[in-house]
Figure (cartoon, helix red, strand yellow):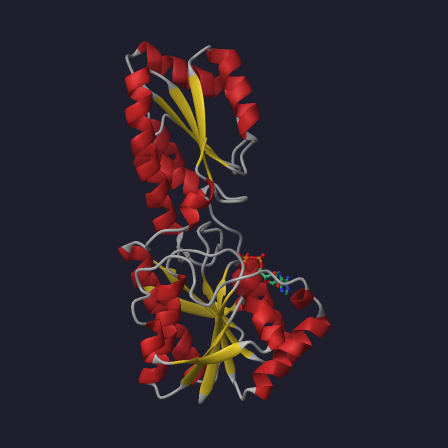
Length: 320
Ligand code: ADP
């Protein structure tokens, strides 16, 4: 291939810029041209793309968000919308497309491949780490570290005042951020959508903690586990402890990417370009163990996200 394009789509994640940079620089290394598409599939439908040089990605590896901007496009969910997108690639003589985004964006990349034969390669970019085929998605490590730092700060205040705090973290239907932030932050309780919430058990853990002299209690609540106000009400009613809550929200989506996310994004970006160089498409890249892997997007998306039950049990083991 002589010319490819790259876009970011769906929710932004720290490390997306490092992935764009890797795509641009490895393409240049292999003597391929790269177009950057603005605002994900919206820009693809509208033909909003321009050439990226090695220098246009200078000074971006450390920046959160995405320099190409990102969006959600309802039109792209229709066959007609995707047809326009395929046409704008053809009009610009673009032969392959790298899509950086979450599961929805990767499904879109697969549709472009199956409907119009566009050679697409997906890179998993989402803080949620909710794709079963890859051990990690770009942005997860940074988001978890942001949550851990927030928990550290909350712990100072909560122990000074002898209070319990419920920290709500992101993750949509996944408890991955909650599990890792909870374990690394030393939380007493971690509530995830993968397990039914048992408030009697939560209350007993917190009361036991108070009885053995713990000065603070941290409850990490995944947004998909249960509503925050319900957790506040039920825990208050069962314990009578002094309770506060904090919603971390979009704080977790931004910020400078961690070393892990920069390295992952760089490795996946390079592999995506190498696959296109070999004229392959309809694929996603990911990481298993320390190996970069690729497989058909449709097979990848059929793999159910895994929740690390053992780590969940271990977090409980250490929490008292
Ligand atoms: P994420 O990629 O972060 O999961 P979304 O699920 O919102 O975010 O998907 C981003 C965009 O990808 C959507 O706005 C839509 O344009 C496209 N998309 C999502 N699901 C599909 C699908 N099943 N088929 C085609 N395109 C899709």
